[in-house]
Length: 144
Image: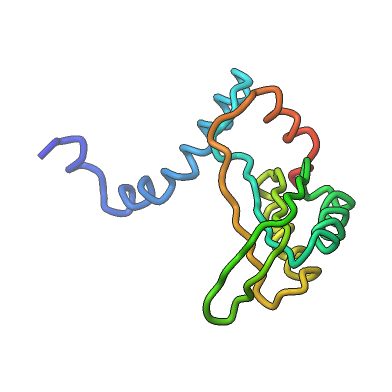
């Protein structure tokens, strides 16, 4: 066994293991601040299915008024089929460019104004993209 590992006490090793995600995140943010590079997963795209285009426009307007997204696209006339308690039918899909902290606020906001009991809200992290565009999202969606 490595002598350096055998001299560490179990609480110290446990602390190091538990702090790894925090330390890694801090290192990534420091690297990003120094180099101006994008940290994968900092922003996300949320998809919200709506019953019709008017509801999608109302939700989009509410999201933009609260600055929960940098942009909102409305893709009309999508079709959805769901089993169980879901609903089937034509609708509009509402992709929105979000930063992660506002994503949680946006989820609660979507649910409060969406007509479905269980609205479809899906978020996908943005791994890569145009650096200028990703910076634009950062500037247009407050993180607090």
